[in-house]
Length: 102
Image (cartoon, rainbow, N blue to C red):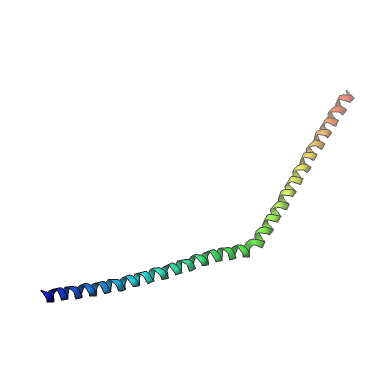
């Protein structure tokens, strides 16, 4: 009976040590995985910032060109309105001349 207990205790000790070793391996893998995830996301964020920093002058140039284009379009619209007013004035002048001739 005593031998059976010793054998059982030895087996339990061996299994416990084996489980402990597996748990340490799992914990180590989890820590390494966490470190790699932090590095991975750090690289993604850094590359996005770097891409924005690289592209920013071009974005500013495009925005300035759009503002200039918008100002030009507004100017063109005001010129067109003035032209319409001028045409209306000429039409009115022609009508008045026609009325005066009669």
